[in-house]
Amino acid sequence: MILEPAIEQLARPDMEALQLSRLQETVSRVYARVPFYRQAMDAAHVTPDQIRTLRDLERLPFTRKSDLRDHYPFGLLAVPLEDVQRFHASSGTKGKPTVVAYTRVDIRRWARIVARAVATAGGKPGDRFHNAYGYGLFTGGLGLHYGIEELGAAVIPVSGGNTPRQVQLIMDFRPRGISGTPSYVMNIVDEMTRMGLDARSTSLEYGILGAEPWSESLRQQIQEGLGIKAMDIYGLSEVIGPGVAIECIEAQNGLHIAEDHFLPEVINPTTGEPVPDGETGELVFTSLTKEAFPVLRYRTGDIASLDPEPCRCGRTLVRMSRVKGRLDDMLIIRGVNVFPTEVEYVLLQIPELAPHYQIEVNRVGVMDTLEVHCEVTSEYWTAVQSVQPEHPHIQALRQKIAHLLKSDLGISVGVRVHQPRSLARSEGKAVRIIDRRGEGS
Ligand SMILES: [Zn+2]
Image (cartoon, rainbow, N blue to C red):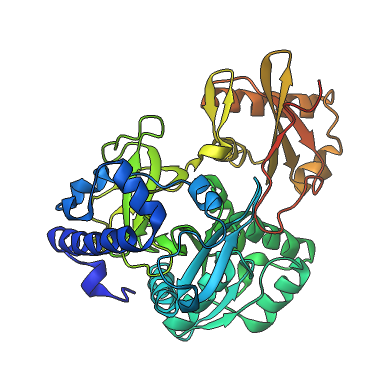
């Protein structure tokens, strides 16, 4: 269902005209109201009146996550504090959290953006919707919540955790839609199986999953395990939260960006130069309509590409590829770039393995090594009754996994096979990498 055809099917020249006028307005506002942006633009020798075409965007300086931390908590606001209706913040894994703010108008607009996204993924007014994203400072829970209500659907605000209760609520409330991180939704599927339920026979028909990079193989597993269509949603608090982009249920092939609100670019992360459509690089967004916390050319650290080709759903909004990984999560092992999603893509095609894994990075001398921990399925465990490395079946399985990983990643990796349910489970965002480099030695 196309909720706002006038925007979602807008012809390219009209969209670009809309984007340009909103960009000019945003640049003028932040230049006048946010000292950080005025100083950065002065240093780059660019003034608001020099933004005459969309290409002039490239004259503007980038904004980085560190700029948000340096102005903690309220230094980048473009409105008086009294006009803020809500704050969110991202977890401060490296020092201070990054704080973002919304006016009343921002909150309403965001709800509209998410409503459009939920409709794009197959949601309808009258649906019941199980929202397993975490509520709180994280934007996922409340971001989806307001959008589901705006669409005219009923939200079940479960938040994350307490998986047996999640299963019970799905059985009793009979929702059509579900949202959460892919690793956590997979955890719910496992719990259903463990409780002796048929996960394929629930009322669920579609899922809106995101907030962590995931692979096409995991999508297939979730879709088969739960008997649903699973769509990828993208967003980050610095840009607004969930709803920046989402896949359509018709094509499930790239995420339509809400381009009337967020102007996308893909750049070479080393040089900062734009890369051609279809080529992979770092995603950069400029907000076009935000009041409290506008951002100019925010470097997301997410690796993806853009596809301007028309989509068979009828929307003209440009599509981004699924996020291949985060620059922060990119491992450089003996000179080769490795993203956890690439490991996941390989592992989940191996029928003996359950969809749970962890990647351990170690340093032996000056050499970085990578060891992949995976879990066998309970069927395999029942048949073989061993995960001992020297057991002939396990030895053969480990060789098979190592061979497939090597041919896909281009480097040799160690493989450890574990019993079912022995690796840590996701209660939200999955912990995929254990980095032991720098732990003594
Ligand atoms: Zn589409």
